[in-house]
Amino acid sequence: MMQVIVNGESRQFQSGISIADLLKLLKLNSRAMAVEVNQQLKPRDLHESTFINDGDVLEIVTLVGGG
Image 1 (cartoon, rainbow, N blue to C red):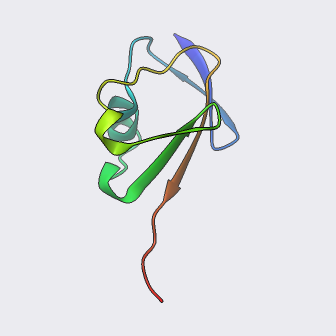
Image 2 (cartoon, rainbow, N blue to C red):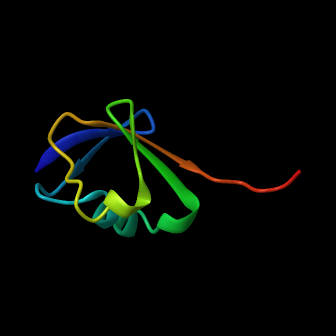
């Protein structure tokens, strides 16, 4: 198990999961999300290949359209 911070909350997940896996576990639609790992924005096309490490800090925000 690894410990990560997601939106300010300490969480535990299995080691070896990608951003895409994490979003699925959290039941979030990756198309409507922006994900930052350790203060670096991760483009959606890298979510499958970017793996989360113990101690990482993630911010996941919902993209909202409108005017």
